[in-house]
Amino acid sequence: MSFEVKDKEICSYSGRDIYPGHGMHYARLDSKSFVFQSPKAHSHFVHRWNPRRIAWTLDYRKAHKKEGQASQQGRRRRIKRNVVRGVAGLSAAQFKAKTQEFTKMNKAQAAKFAEASKRRVKTEKVHHK
Image (cartoon, rainbow, N blue to C red):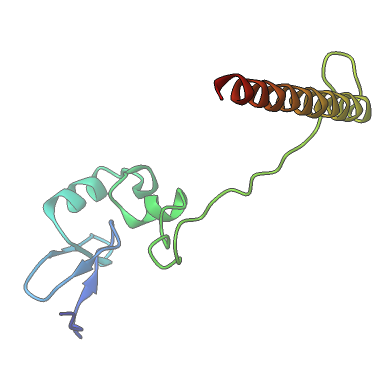
């Protein structure tokens, strides 16, 4: 069940929502006021620690591209790209020709073995009868 709160504020340090009755206000001597979600956020602000370097703040999440992943449908995947490069002194074209030659040899050898096994099965059937 989700509901919308109209009077919520945003923390000056962490960027998170502050609901009514929570948080604290802080006024500087130059009469600029800030609102903090927690004493922890206030302490970090007073120490002047950069929120982009603090992992639990929204500034950090935006700076490190962690924000907005929930809105994306599914998982983002890298596209696999096969790149043929030269290997062992052969260019890409020579390497491709060599691999095709090997695949032809392997297919011929596999056909030869299949034929031999078929002949062997036939002779075994003849001997069993």
